[in-house]
Image (cartoon, rainbow, N blue to C red; front, side, top):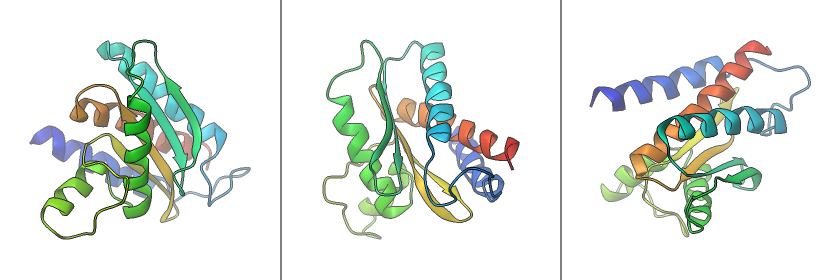
Length: 161
């Protein structure tokens, strides 16, 4: 419960910190530099936990900016990461929050989406830039890795404002 609260606070802080405008960065697109920072942090976190995962960083249309499947990550994890990106970019929710709202009947189902944790949105100036999604281990572990990636983007945005 406390960990879930901390993760929600982290995501909320990312929204606050990501309101800075960046020189050299398009304010409406996930940049290569942002994707690289997210990928490095997510992979480092996964390695620390000894987890083999697929990490996908997408733009606001769920189109891949960067995709890495670590050695030992299941091949099917690519499809799950893509499905989580669809959910995140179409709802602007984490894939875990989407699952909760879908189950409660509060939102419509996203065609091709999944109801597993591990997809986290990235915002800049209140606009959805894209998503960091992860698949390959338990869904709550996927979410931890995705949050590590989004934290790296938030840090990058703060340092480069």
